[in-house]
Amino acid sequence: MKGLIKIFAALLILLMVSPFSVICQETDFSVTGRVIDNSTQQILSGVNISVAGSRMGTVTNQEGSFNIQLTNMPSVLYFSHIGYAIQVIQIDKNSSKDIVVNLQPETIEFNEITISSERIQKVTRGDSLYVADYEIIGDRMVLIAYPYKRPRLQRLYLANLTGDIISIRDIKHAGKEIQYPEKPFPIRSYFFKDCFNQVHLLTKDRVWQILVRQDEVFCLYPTRYEDFLGYLFPMKVELNGNLFYQVSTRVDNETCVIHSNSEKSSLKVVHDSIGASRYMFARNVSAPIIRKDSTIAIFDFFDNHIELFDSDGVSKTRIPIRFHLRKVSPFLQKEYYDLDYLNFQQELITDEITGISYAIWRNKRTGRFSLQQIDINTGDIIRVIEIPGYPNISKIHCNDNMVYFMYVTKNSPYYQTIYRMRI
Image (cartoon, rainbow, N blue to C red; front, side, top):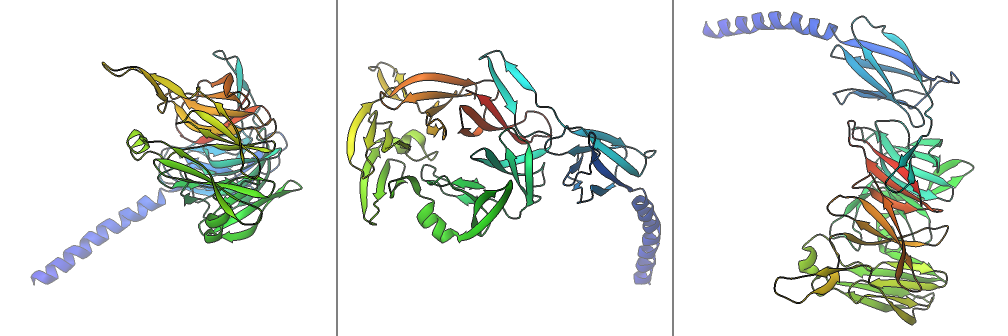
């Protein structure tokens, strides 16, 4: 009897709950519509649509149409697309269920930075689109981007250097944890530019060569990671058929050369006697290597010099440097100079067009970056370029006297985008 009573009680509860559940489902609001260019009235595909305060969202199809289910009223929809200003629309119970959204092409604006009289331009326009990585190929830029908080909706974009989108391709499983020689832990990477200046796309299982032809971007020649990591990835510089690569630990960085006849030889070892305790587990020893005309330059920040080698790996000269040092004043001990590991990033970037090299600095207190132009012939710093107003930037590139970098916005949605600044 008690068992029957429990069954009847359960049925009664089910009858009471089920109608209520149906009523709740019927309160869902389905919104459909189209997105068009406000100037040309052309339909826009691939427009990102997100619901404020949630992870809900969708993307317009090839016909510019969309359909989205809203569970809360009122709801705020964000419509964003590269090259267009973000459009915000509020939907309530009295709103039409079929809407037309007009996106306004975004005008590039230059913000005057009074601190340094430089101009900083936002390259990737539109909000809520997160740029995971980018690379520059000639006068074009390739980038991996996806809607905010929706990393599975990855796309490969081809754009010019001012951010105008030329072509788009859907991709899947982009990104791979890669162990770089100077880093103690793997870093998630999407693009890799090899020593031949060829850009590769890293995916879950394969590495693809990026090819740009007639304003289209292609992913060709898939390579296994065993082959990529074993041969192409470690190579830093190519010169006259000889390949230069490095092996790094917490106390040593060794540069080796593979000659055109396949013979290997050790070129230089940079040693940091206190590296293991200096950085703990934060990094390995860095010894930037760059190509300057027919010369290889290796920077030794611990013996305070640049050593120049010819294409065969023969040492030609050493140039003393001091720009990387800071004065250390121990309590009751004699002052001395040591590597400024707190602010100096021990990284160099080279402008592929002008050939100018810059050392990267980050002020630990403010988080702001600066570039210091190095005269390879003298080892002196001849110019300092501040990047004001954008702390904690990443992926710095120089191209034709323009510095590019990625930055995460301070306000919601916290998307990562690309800026550039004339230097």
